[in-house]
Amino acid sequence: MSNKTKVIVTILTAISASGIYYTQSKEGTVLKPYYDSVKVATVGTGTTVYPNGQKVKITDAPITKKQATEYLKFHIDKDAKIFNKTLLGVPLSQTEYDLYMDFTYQFGTGAWSQSSMLRNLKQGKYKQACDSLLKWKYAAKRDCSVRSNNCYGVWVRQVERHSKCIGTQ
Image (tube, rainbow, N blue to C red):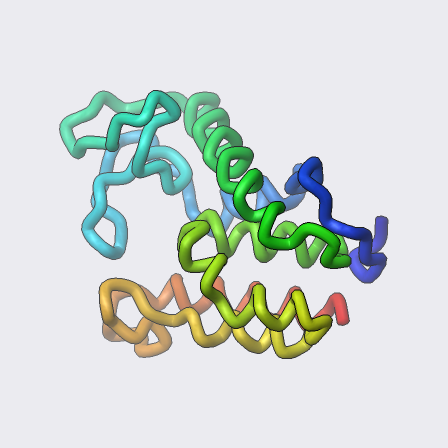
């Protein structure tokens, strides 16, 4: 499907391989546990909780690149079950699906479920949904559009998502 062809989201809709790659490239992959921009122990590609339910600890052993990809796919698939239910019957292009799923991976299903992006999509207001991405520029109460707040990457990612989103309209 092209990036402008919209199909109805169902419970079985899934992120594409290019969507997984996009998330990996924007999250970055670090094989040794580290603290993310909001001081949460993280490993791999933004993993804060292992598939077995245990939280990542800064003292955990490093993981492999393969494990990082497996953990990412596990969490995206888990998030997609909630994400897809919020969008049942809403037509989206694969590009839109992937970028909103990437948003959900970064900010969580709770943030997605309460977002103006979701409200706009349900009303068929696709451009407004894209524009709503730009509201999400905060991490730990810091405005990430301000470079000196040490979270500028959050803002850059939102601007990129917005640009890709607008490009599908």
